[in-house]
Structures are given as structure tokens and as C-alpha cells.
Image 1 (tube, rainbow, N blue to C red):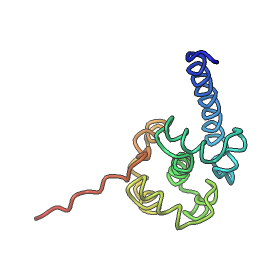
Image 2: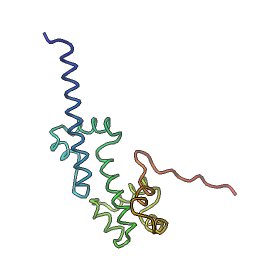
Image 3: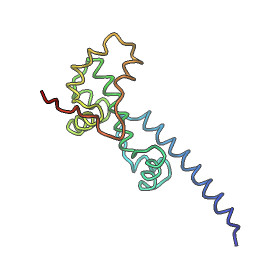
Length: 153
């Protein structure tokens, strides 16, 4: 019969092992955001089931692997849109999205405006150092961007 503390020690070791693998998954998403990634491929690379990866990733980082991936893609898209030399469609494909509709919807949810509107507003950050512009325009994570209340005049 095993001592009860062994079970706790094994569980703690498993959690630690999962955290290491989750960090590797997150790092892979950060590096390969423009590649065609899906939860199944990420899970295979981490030697986990897709369901276990999704549950553990959400517990560790507060969002699903897909949501994290899309946030990385939108952050990169914001940079490319501020640069101004690519069309919205070109930016969509450059960051690894295969659907302009999904890209535009997710961009609007995170940023609070469409990619085209964001590009038009990029002049507001002109002249700012890129590191400041990135901080000021960072997408909102895990919730939709705040919508302005209608003004009654």
C-alpha cells in the first residue's frame, strides 16, 4: 500500500511537468503564430491529448490555446497595419489567418474597431517610438473591447 504523501508528490510532479509542457506550447505559438497551428498539432508536440492541453492551458493562462494564438496574430496584424504597406487582406494572410471574415471579426472583438478603421487611426501613433505604440494599442485579452456608450444630446 502506498503512503498518501506519495500520491500528493506524484500529483505535484505531474502538475509541474504539465506546466513545463504548457510553457513550451505557449512559446511555440509565440514563435510560429503565422504557421497553420491547431490544438491537435500543439497537443501532439506536447505529448498531451487535445482536451487535456486545452483544459490545462486555460487553467494556466486564463484562455484557450486558440484564443492565445489569435491574440498573437492580432498583435502582429496591428503592427503590420500601422506600417501601412500591406492591404488588410495581405495582413490577414501574413499573420497566418486563412479567413478574412474570421480575422476581421476577431480583430474587431479584441481591438474595438475593424482592421480598416484601425489602419486609418494609425496616424495617431505616428511619431511614437514603436515600443510605446505597441503598448498603447495592445489588444484587449479575454473580453471584447469596450463599446462606447451612446451619447444623449
